[in-house]
Image (cartoon, rainbow, N blue to C red; front, side, top):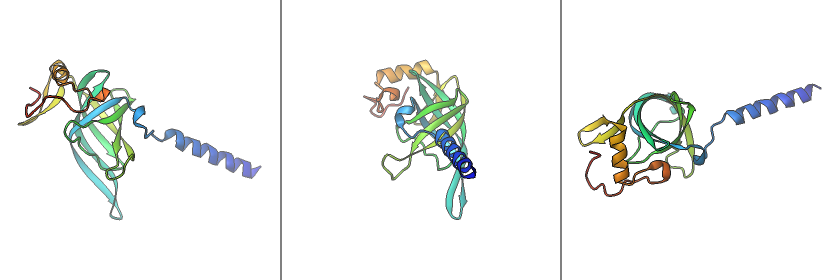
Length: 168
């Protein structure tokens, strides 16, 4: 009787851990996030990074719309900014409050980790220009996206015909 109780407890614990683990399948993350910048403090244990905490700014692409997002985070690994027009897969954990982002483990093919961003969704969109980060209305940015066939939610990850121009 005692052995069966221990086995049931172990099975229950294993199922709980498995169900609470975040999926690492990009197909499970329908949204896209472009991280412009962040400030971060990394905490170490025996010379190995243990967690990173900080805050930052990003754009969120959701259902054909784009909005700026201010966020803070506490991740198991260091957060990386997007390079160029790169975006990361994401999904809402708590709508408009907590976003789970799927990030690559750099240096390893097809390896990912998740990080939860505690978000504040803005009414405007962040835009990186030659003189730094600024904001503009979503409709103006959407017009730019259409003109340059840029739609990271649908695999159009690099804008066409941009040359050296900004999103103005």
